[in-house]
Length: 280
Image (tube, rainbow, N blue to C red; front, side):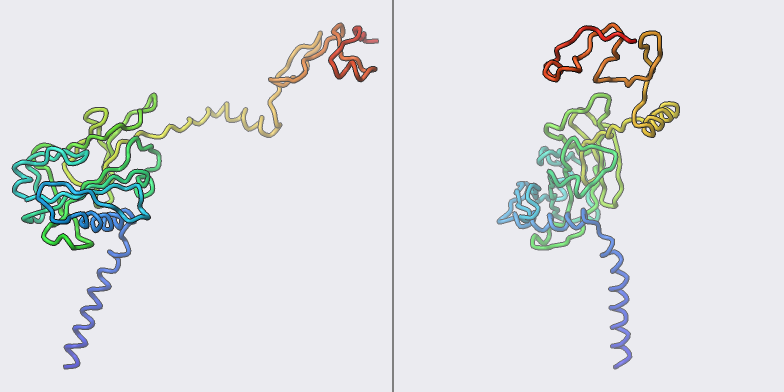
């Protein structure tokens, strides 16, 4: 009896340790998905199929919007969903594995977008929108794995409301974060519309503008200027060349110019001028 029990214990421990790296590898974004799935499912109170229900995330995630809609897989394939928030789901969408009913959880991450989905070198023109599919057999379940969905005919459309204007000289792109951590860029269908054949998280972005590096000759001048404190140019004073800053507070004075009185402080302060000082 002791040996089988010991073998069973070792087997349980082995399974646990094999799962441990997967648990540790979960990213903050994937942890957020699990939390939002739980809170979106809480919106189902006597749910009706095909009706979206807005949920409420935890208070420490204020600013995020969530919603859930329960659908029959057969109806999803034959009818699609004409409008679910910013998403239009066409006919022909299938899920793997097959389930009789599924739930689409909608996410609008608002000002949390760059926190959970940082994208160096790019600027977001719209918040991250998410669409994830789950099994609907147990509406009290937590930490559900996502179903794999695929649009087999027409793509799923995402119409972003009022994205920020595209900066001059920039080109807007659609960005898609899939559930495996991959980032994909595609062209916009129109100024506000992106398309996808899979679920995930989506936004409109542009590349951030970075000032080009100066040419090597200009770099040398900048380095010399930094060493000397200020680059000086030559100017002509009378018949003599002398160094002068590019911007000067006091203009060069010639021999025949009037200069401030030096003998009377009052006159000097008020800017009065004396007779010309001649060089001896």
